[in-house]
Length: 503
Ligand SMILES: Nc1ncnc2c1ncn2[C@@H]1O[C@H](COP(=O)(O)OP(=O)(O)O)[C@@H](O)[C@H]1O
Ligand SMILES: [Mg+2]
Image 1 (cartoon, rainbow, N blue to C red):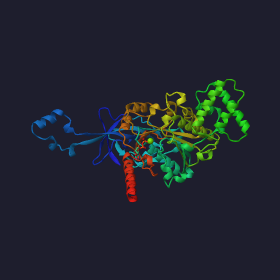
Image 2 (cartoon, rainbow, N blue to C red):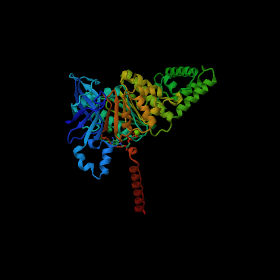
Image 3 (cartoon, helix red, strand yellow):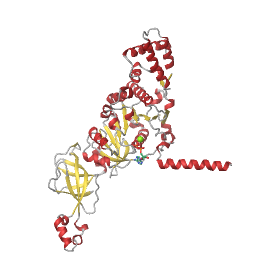
Image 4 (spheres, protein in one colour):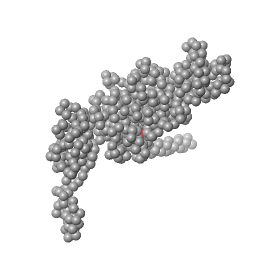
């Protein structure tokens, strides 16, 4: 579709910007994509602004003098006849005749015709994939955003935005797409740490319940026999070298004694109490205190729940709903254990390639916090650094990117950013996300709920899109304040009616 013609202004067209006068009866919106030809090939550009001009209203003195004389300038030169719409566009890249994409090094010529970018052009330009996950539609264009899952996930994904911007909603859409993927395109396992219990909707929805496996925090168990001394060291970061050595010895000892039979922390503590080799009673006492503290969390038992073969399966969503736990430390222990288990199991290919989704990721991999308050940070950073080799992908979700481990965040090669208004967070995003210009930052602060920007590995160029409508049911806990108030009153009314009926 022809939309206008490139014009010549004082400093455009340049390689960074060009202006075009809009054709008759054509509407072009800020943010839309247009194409124009140059010697290099076809340039794709984003409309960065629309400007109105009218040659008769350019000079303040003549407008004022005309009015003073009692005549009306707008009657003489009506705006529908003399007003021009000028589009301002920023070239993003160029296709040469071989269909290869590069930066553009020459500006379009004045007089060159400008066209609205077509579906295929946008699809190809941003590097979408027919078999990718469909997260929504390109803003202002009727083109589905279909992202290749290797590009989106293999080098990790971060979803960042202020609270209420639509992070969990977008994550729900991503999960639906991953569950519904066709077998021939490859299905991965999805393990979700659900901090607020927002995703139980999947277990209530007929379409997804068969593909969803829910584990509540209270049922979660870490099987002690499978624990390595390193894991104990991670969850007990204050252990001294001596304490570690003694614990390692005790573990080896109890394994030998039990000969494959399961044991739990109580058994281990009993071993410690009766141990003859530990010389210092201090060491024994402190270790005993550590172990009994761990034991009192109720997280440890004879066997793992969920067992490994249920934890990650192709096309299955495993929800670890830890909203019933209040202790931050216990939550971190769970995340740490799950992370380690997934990483190890993938290394020996016991489970399918898996995506680990962490809601409130800053709570599990906090930046600038002492080790003992960041038990799970180590494994998250490890997966961030090495996970891609073994196909363990991370999706870190956070409304506090400033508080999220820089090591982990910097390994997330794709960022999806929704509305953010806090200037500190915006500034941080500008520094940590690649390819974000000041213009783009401004747009981020004005996004509506459900509008998002994707930058990085998954797309060839930063792209704004509207998240598609979810298909799965919304969980009770995801309902709005209004809905919750209405439901509460309904319930109360029902109770009082019941009471009346009874009397
Ligand atoms: N793309 C969207 N379309 C429609 N409603 C949305 C969309 N994204 C978010 N919402 C609504 O906005 C509210 C906040 O979304 P949520 O995903 O919980 O935000 P966050 O996780 O960022 O705090 C929810 O009520 C949700 O239903
Ligand atoms: Mg949320």
